[in-house]
Image 1 (cartoon, rainbow, N blue to C red):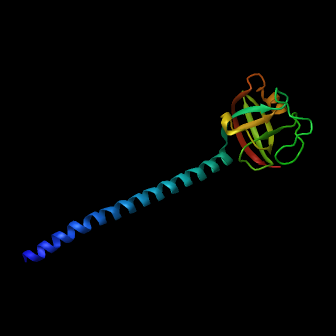
Image 2: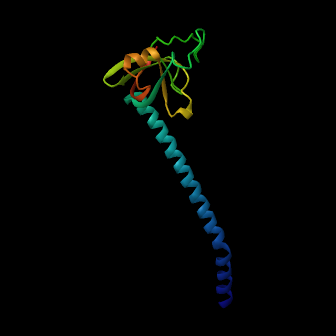
Image 3: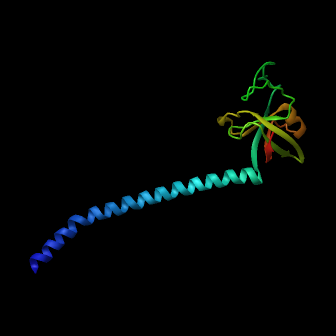
Length: 153
């Protein structure tokens, strides 16, 4: 009987660390998997909220400033840039998406036809000079704009 107890003790001492490691690894794996799934679901939900309920964007405008676009410059979708058109640039929204922008009580509808602004600027939307004029954004240069996705053109 003593011999059986000794063997069981040795067996328990040698397998316990391996079992603990396996439990830790599977626990870590499931936590990682759970976190990844949660992050993915959260990202998917935020995109859905963006599309249906709108969002706020730190916006600026381009065209006609110190870095003037050349008269024949093209936007990311290939059309000629016209700073007076009601257009905007966004990094991820599909080309042709129509947005209702509201700033300081004024609203304008723009169409996404370009990509930008650069990530390092801290802004997520660039509007044409024409749209910025309609919104009253010219003087400040940047501002928090309420964005509602209203469809595709």
